[in-house]
Length: 85
Image 1: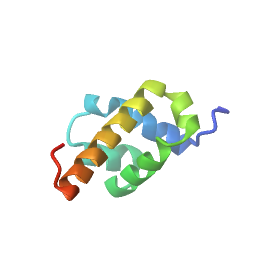
Image 2: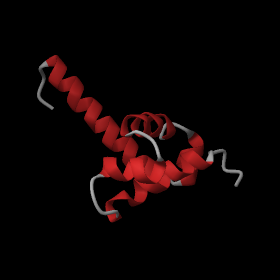
Image 3: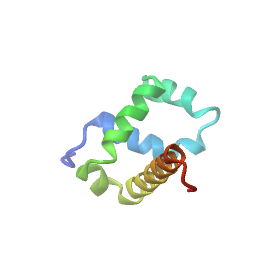
Image 4: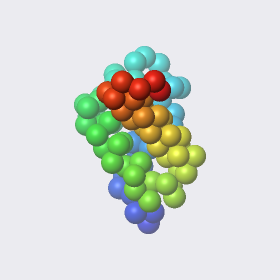
């Protein structure tokens, strides 16, 4: 595939899109299906959703993940500054 993503990056996006369909905890599924620690998974996912190739590959998923991240960041910033979110 010439979408600019590695097989691992495509697997991460596919997993994130479908993980709710798997039985058990997400962290267990990450280890079992992707053979990586949850910390590494989230590190790679965080970088991945900022890539244009990921946005082109699955725009709805990447936009949703960016919104969630931005909302968490805004909440964290508001909490740190003492302003209501």
